[in-house]
Image (cartoon, rainbow, N blue to C red):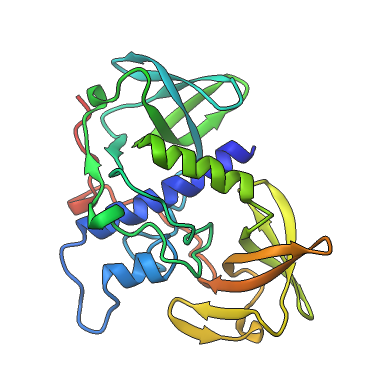
Length: 270
């Protein structure tokens, strides 16, 4: 489900941005939040508070709110499906600032600048469940039950309409101008990925014009390993996706969860 993949991608960026905004301090010798979330490509520092987009937080779904209730929202997705988004006092609810979502920051980090703190450096704002109204566009992250058409949300993001438009544009351009996912095979200059964006295997090839980076450090194709998460920009040439830039974030940790206390604690929802 491409819509779910695009929603998951945006939620990951959102949590990286929220983590950066809430980070009280940086130990000497560590990257700044801007380096971790922005230069790394939107998923936060590997193993840091931003993690890998929430780790075990489940899938994402985006839609327009049609009904608001004390314990759930009803949304209509771009595909015309109606879902019930269930939330509780443990659900994190916030909105992202108005402004553009940059291309950088795909599924495994990337070459671009990523989401960071949002347009103009504005951090995400935690809100109450009641602040979300019918007509708003929201992203819900949690356990998606496609049969029951429901989501057990651990996080909900109120999305600015311009951002929603850009998410849809990113979704439409997936496989045309960018790819993202986990490296499953490397055969010479051909790299195969598995991505949750379209739940499919995709491949790209590198040529003499392709640049490779791990955060801000230049690397080569030989430094990329099976299991690494990458974000690729390029174009389809002769039916083959040819990479111009490849951002490598390495292998994600096996078990990553969202902090439940301290600066990352769930906000009140009522």
